[in-house]
Image (cartoon, rainbow, N blue to C red; front, top):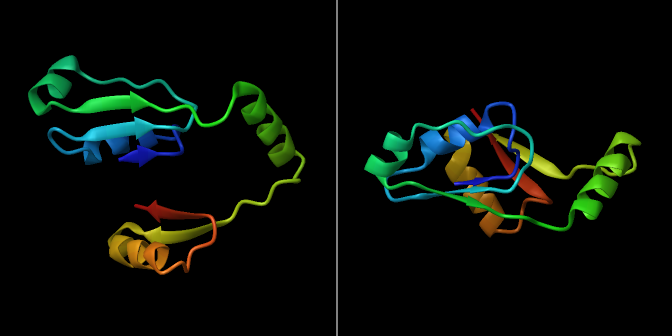
Length: 102
């Protein structure tokens, strides 16, 4: 699971979606991750932090977004449409990000 959001409950959902022996990559910034160690150990789940860009670049991007100077490019899909989202990504029919919404 790759979490580009990192807030509003996405970390809890992301960890729930991560299967036994799986990896949960957290890229988005925002909230504290709370997890029971025993759940991670028994399921052998892995949490990986991944920094994309520098802190200065992130700060600049947030300022640009706040001023409306950055346009987000994404396509939303219902969670039940995950396969369609993957096909659209594979076929090059998505500009920006494909976002699954539960």
